[in-house]
Amino acid sequence: QTETKRLRFSRMVSPDPIQFMALPCRDVTSWNLTDRCHFVRSVPSCEPNAGFIDYLEVIYCLLGPEKHLYTLGMSVVWLLMLFVALGITSGDFLTPALFVISKTLHMSQNVAGVTLLAFGNGSPDIFSSLAGIRQGSYELVIGGLIGGGIFVTTVVAGSVFLTQPFKLAARPFLRDCLFYTSAGVWAFYLFYTGSLSIAHAIGFICLYGAYIVLVVVSGILYQKYICTNEKSEENEKKEEKSPEKGRLQPILA
Image (cartoon, one colour):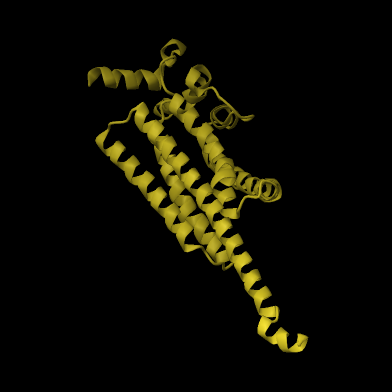
């Protein structure tokens, strides 16, 4: 305890760049306000891995600790602007491109949604999760993934339901719910027991692969079923329109 108190006291009084090399960037809040700029510039883990803006440099060095309220307000406004830009990009570029690709490949909307749209929406989560794992923020990554899934299934789905009423296919929706619930229960079991290995990670990928295969196969079978029904209906209409042989015989006689 005495060594911990001395370490905290030294952090608050005299920061040394040599001691920063092994510290995680999240420890910036344990330093004095006047030393946080020096901290983010000295610690290697605080260096931005991707992006054009160094947010830590802006918050702790450019604006300074005395403008924390201004920094908070500006961050909220910037976040809202990013959400708007993301929505415009998705509506003007991603959705039309996916629509053209699905039509070109003769894919149904359900198959395109669980493959192309899922890849487009999930790719940022993959890169952000990998960056978080490299920095040692394991709880943040897991919380972000689970929270993102809950946000999509609640807020996003609720917003879609309020926008325009539509009919939802019962069997595909039940299939999606079963796979989503299975993945969630499996992840909870692994986190609860604390036993996570490469085999479990491969198992999650195989589960998604099985889900994609099931979606594609069910879509193909459904299209064949529709074509068969359409052909049978056309044959029935032709038989109803064609005259019977018994009625033709008196006319020919």
